[in-house]
Amino acid sequence: MPGTDFILDELERLEGLNQRRFLKSLDQANAREVSYRGKRLVNFSSNDYLGLASHPRVKAAAQAAIEEFHASAGSSRLICGNLGIHERLESRLACFKQKEAALVFSSGYAANLGIITALAGEGDQIFSDALNHASIIDGCRLSRAQVFVYRHKDLSHLERLLREAPAARRRLLVSDAVFSMDGDVADLPGLAALAAMHDCLLMLDEAHATGVLGSTGSGIVEYFVERGSLAPDKRCVDVAMGTLSKALGSFGGFVACSASLREFLNNKARSFIFATALPPSAAAAALESLQLINEEPFRRESLWKNFGALKGRLSEGGFDVTASETPILPLTFGAEVAALGMSDRLADRGYFVPAIRPPSVPKGTSRLRITLCANHSGDEVEGLAKELSELAQDRR
Image (cartoon, rainbow, N blue to C red; front, side, top):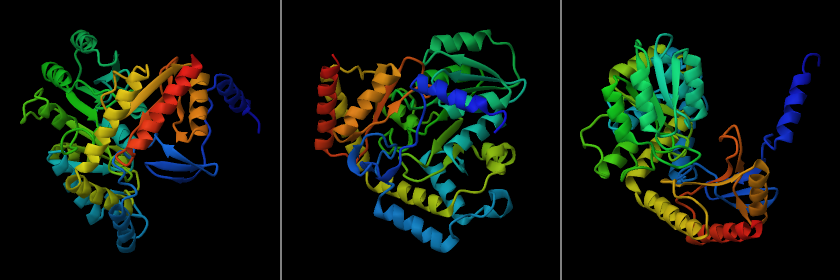
């Protein structure tokens, strides 16, 4: 095919850097285990933190929605795809996040693109954490706003950028709530104080916080209120974005916000306006998961118990996991080939933990990203810790 030599050249370049990606064909997968190349492996890479994707009630709700509404909504929400189940889900999400309203998007990626490009444009400013998710970065780029990137969680740097930046029509401060590759939590009290001081809208991506942080799983605001760092009535997050595809065990994205902002996004967020509505089965599954999160707090308790156990054992084994505050535990090996090798050796021993390499993480920080779920048994957690410690000793 003429003019396509660059494709093979780029693939060869990625191969030489050990950064070329390949799809892993899984015969079966859930939060706790996968079947890969005919072998059962304990899965420590899923974002299904509470194990709800395989819950019988969640699956039954999805199946019932297909029978009632069929497999697809068939249109965008603004034409003829707005179903009652979408509105029920949005009402429940708003209540869960203690906001006036919510709006559901076709994915978390689409939500961030739509929200950011609707809220900021030419003549505006965005202040973004250096380790924000790719969907935030892409939303910032597409917005055509002036983007200021502050060093990861460095509020002194952020304050200086806010203070020294010229006047702008609007300002948006955006950060992950839980950083997906490191497991650390944003300093919400500090961000909220700076946003108020410098007249910024504050947006947080709670993809990995929703269902996980706080005693009810509501997210980062509840987490800091319960720690005494925020007043209980402090509504400091203007835009709370989240996903249905992680702890809620379904698929899709959402924003919880004021009623007026919901209507604004309904009219201005292109990734909402021009996308087919969320499949009814996904909406129904998310609704049932929200109910289970309320009814079965033991799932979140089990998740945090597993996190504490594995973090403790890894620390004892000489791994530096002190920065992680959530059930995401990164083990950094630096070079791509080292992370890939460790992942392969773990697979040989029965554990599925794919290597994470640039551009998903900064250059020189290739790693294993371990994620825990409520369904992991104590023996599985202990077994992974034991294998990692032995493999680390072998590398030395």
